[in-house]
Image 1 (tube, rainbow, N blue to C red):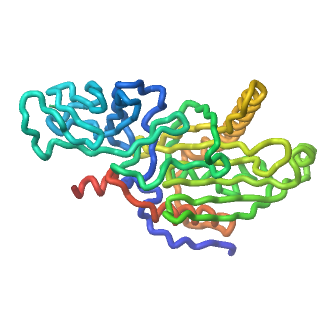
Image 2 (tube, rainbow, N blue to C red; image 1 turned 90 degrees about the vertical axis):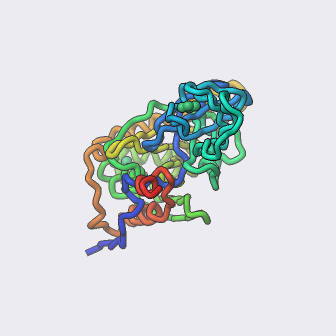
Image 3 (tube, rainbow, N blue to C red; image 1 turned 180 degrees about the vertical axis):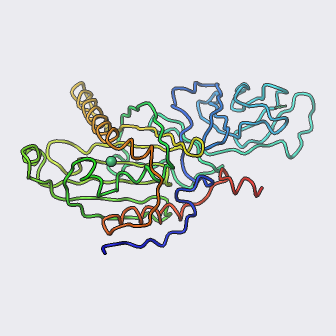
Length: 344
Ligand code: FES
Ligand SMILES: [Fe+2]
């Protein structure tokens, strides 16, 4: 039998107790105005994000180290956040710098701070004070001005590692999406091991009338790639190297909500073009990207709301799945993981 055996110990992959280090979405950038604070749940953690007077976003554990008040109801004071209850003020490192009723500040008056980033019109938080890498990008768009639009987030009833693999499940392209393409797989790992790139390319089929028209317009070959970052962001590029159309880019940012529930934030990205005509083209490509996503999403949804994943019988065509599992298993657990938290 044409079967691939995976030497797979369940460690990080599909494990609800572990939150891997990576960038997770806190909220859209526009939801946090200057000098405002709000608390959000990220991967089961209550985190306060606030924008200082200088416009920069900071993130801390939300519960005040004094008596546990949610700092999200506090006030931004310069570039610090001041607790609503007894007005202790914390800086972006989580250090308490002011206690109004006394001058001495105890050493323990500090809270965990987190690295933040603003990208693709979202605020992202990393479960460490410093992040070793920025929020992932498309190579093709690096250094270029981009435009993004985003959709409402959706929920799926499975671990994000499972629904993330959709883009590299070669068999289902044929069976679920009716895309009859013979795919060759190319695989690339970055040095840190937090990014893995899958490229699938092949020849467009020419059996049906629709397929022949497609070949006439787009050319004979088809290519798409999926970049996974930190096991929680998927960057999908479709329509690579075809005629007429540029590559289309979409991002899926995944966040575990509670055990059994994953939130997926779709983001569509296009290069910013100059002038009115450029603006129209950019909008058109963003719309096409969105349409492609809706088509794929609707066909896949019921699989991921009902799956109980087990990789017991993988075929050689499923090799990307086992590669993804191995990749996820070598990611690093963050302090938001249940095990790490209970060891404290
Ligand atoms: S609970 Fe925050 S200052 Fe007292
Ligand atoms: Fe799919």
